[in-house]
Image (cartoon, rainbow, N blue to C red; front, side):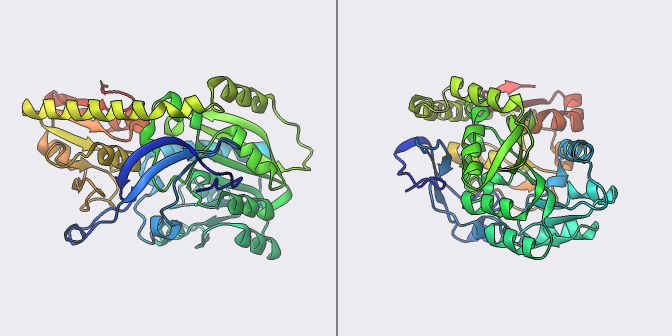
Length: 407
């Protein structure tokens, strides 16, 4: 196996989570009676360019199918994040009715709806049918395709180069990061700006967030590595911000290499922080497996003990990170009988691998669990606030990552 960016041989392991199905491959009742495909879920680090990546087993077309069940608009906090970003970037770049904004992986229009409302022309690029249709229903033009060099060059040839290209939580999801980055360069106007948001590898390691590993996440990124990838495709990073989203993310600002924009001090500071943390040392990656094993063992012990006490436990959030955790720990409905989720696209289905049934939030009032184990810990505050009535009958909220804790 070779690095997806620099083609170096990979010999440094990072994380082995055994075998698991794709994290968003939710099952219908009929599919429960059929064989289920599982794939190795292993991460390696390239010690030349320090890109962390999954082992090659899954194809993008299999992971991001037409009925892809993740709809960004389900989370109110994510909608707020998108709205604030749209307002900020519109002011910062002076976008108006003569500008063009392109979002790659535009999902259900959670972000571009803000540009439509402001009268700023936009285009969504989204390969999954159901989310693209949801965006089109609210007036967002969508091109249904996977993004890469070919599509970027086609947009440029059609006179549709962008003033702003947005990619929120997509850069880690692309199997060919070089082709994708070349597409960004081709589709960007000479004075245009790229903003990408992605979970920060440093925060993943520091926060013991091993459950953010899943097949759809092909890459795990640092600022230093992304800067190298950008440089190899005629782009550069001129600013970076730290974000609290997804347990700690970066928002990078990119432009063409010859753009006159000065580089902000934040870029050098973050690269120095990454080096001081040890992101470019083998030992940092060699120690992570034991951390993941410990979290798994603690969760299993907790659930077994609570079952012996006849505690009523529900899981909340049919999220990808929850599926990683449940499958790595081998948890099944005998320990967690069901999972609650607000997304109608997931309700009535079953989690991949663990086969927990997904039920609507009304089940909390009906079944009155003693403990609600929140799987998407990154939005735990939102979930607790929305369902605070659980405390009325003495119920408690808990998370398992980075450790068992009651909220």
